[in-house]
Length: 434
Image (tube, rainbow, N blue to C red):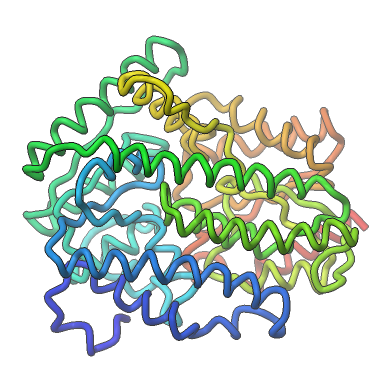
């Protein structure tokens, strides 16, 4: 639970204040890794990027800036038209699951006691539980209607918990064609006008374009890092997949993320040139995780590296299929590029439409990066993805001859499937590959 010293605070973002203190003091980090070497260095990069973002948010909220909570698949760049404090809901839930000692289970329990079904997503339910306790007090929440039913079911609840928390939904088209792109571009354009009226602020195009410049750099740096992962052995440790996933959704269009990637790249290049894995770990198996990593047990990724010789190459949030935006265009064209980018965000691309997109992307990554297997975290709330598991298994077997393991889990709540059961299932699966 949030420490008592924060509970009488009038801040709208009390959890961020605690997260800032946790990040700055490095609480629990040494408990997440085995040894103070490569894993700890990467965690230091992560905290060094997260802390200034959180500090910036706290300072601006204290100065009276409105707080806008947003979904990870919402085009956060448009929020930088205005003076607001952007907070990614899903990133906050899972950042607490990874970093904070108390995790998010108590907030999930609060929401389930309030009436939220157990099978709704912990990514939203963690922050909903904080909002129920008035630890978060958003002025506005912005979300697309995809990629999943949990998104559109959970976000309107914010408005019921606190009257001042208004919710705006961008309607995401099911199809991916020129007509749907034009429609979604209109949704983004209209949102900017509505947000200007809601905030009583004039859009600042220069700040908006600066945010896009940062995101373009982030996309470019991540691509460079992912190119290095093609090397065998992979010069990047498995824990990076988990950290990158939360970093990518927590800090969209932020300079701090670019600094994180620049440090990570230099680190990875060192091992690439040496032709070894970090910590001299042996690489026996290269794995793709088509859905998400297990956030509630961050040290498990390091365990797979050190004790099992298993590399986690990607989860769904570690690879971008969208391109940087060309800013040498008029504002309407930039909005259209942003809409296309948004429709291709991780998970929004794979889970918003037909099942073939998830299958094709997983087969592509497995082939491109010479994966030996896939491990699918069958997250309890990802109902649109659960029927795809068998299609994935058959496609990987038929096209690449590699197996897939499916694990029933809630990636943010350790109680849904005990970790010892998960570990045993994975170990049994790995024995079939040696």
